[in-house]
Image (cartoon, rainbow, N blue to C red; front, side, top):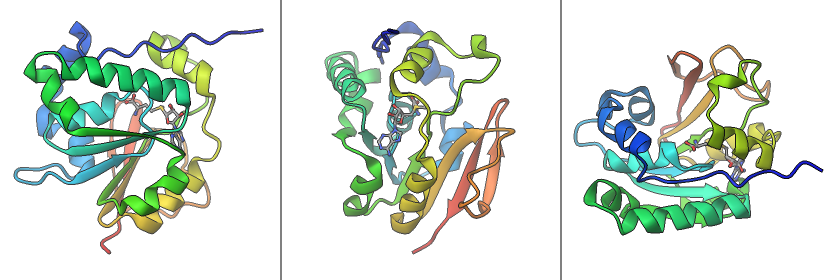
Length: 200
Ligand SMILES: C[S@@+](CC[C@H](N)C(=O)[O-])C[C@H]1O[C@@H](n2cnc3c(N)ncnc32)[C@H](O)[C@@H]1O
């Protein structure tokens, strides 16, 4: 029987420090996708927290972030990593204090949160060039498997988001057929951000 390792989460690592400092600030595609601009700090629900990296970057850029993770071991690991970050220097402690973590399935948890912006980054089936994927993400993939219900999650987000829903998706893969065309997209090397402006 294959036993999946618990992915290591450490927001205070040298590599993550580098990402926070040199990741491009509010000009990076992730920040632009969620609408973080000068003077604009939307409340963001990261509906697929995983290793928490995207959500932590957004909190570092000033957003209040609610992370939702349904896999209990991953959520427990995230909670420990957030606690360690709170006890570390300000670079890590300040964003960690802007993050709330909920252990739940976002499909049902999103509605009551009345979110302004929902960010969704589901687990996709393994890419052939898996050497491009770093070890913690490979461990996470082994533990959670592909998220086969991501269309349901996107539809739930589109029903309740006040301003926008952002879906991170492989650059060359189609969105699920049940999902309408996004308002616009921002492309990265291997992934793209599909942005749905919902304006309730
Ligand atoms: C690809 S990972 C996200 C990685 C994350 N963006 C990061 O920066 O580390 C996807 C995660 O979303 C979680 N997930 C998928 N669907 C979910 C749902 N409906 N509710 C809560 N968590 C979900 C999975 O358990 C997995 O941990």
